[in-house]
Every structure is written in structure tokens, then in C-alpha cells.
View 1: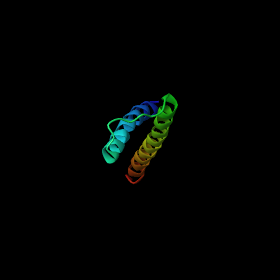
View 2: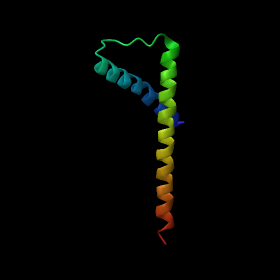
View 3: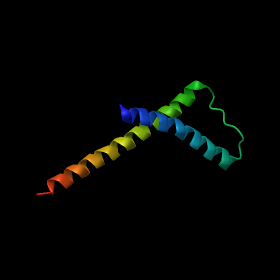
Length: 73
């Protein structure tokens, strides 16, 4: 549940970071997404990207802890 909340917020922040990069590279002053549907599609893509990264990081952390516990004897 926490991963989903963090991924939602980070996915939303990534939209603005990506928009700033595009505006700087192309010299635009504003970006129009073309409506709410394209905006939500970009947010969903960023959400799932962030959620998958967080899942891999948490799995790595749990496996690292288990490995340290197994080698303790």
C-alpha cells in the first residue's frame, strides 16, 4: 500500500520533470497535454515504472537481509 502511494506521488512529480526537460530542449514556454486522458496516460506510465522499480528495490533489500542472516552461523 505504501509502495502504491509513493509510486503515485513520484509518478506525478515525474510528469513535471519530464515536461521541464522537454521545454528546455525544444525551447517551449508551455506544454499542452491535449486533455485529461493523455495526462492520465502519462501519469499511469510513470506510476507503473516507479512501482516496478520500488518492487525490485524492496525485493533486493529483503533478499540482502535474508542472505546476511543465513551466513551468520
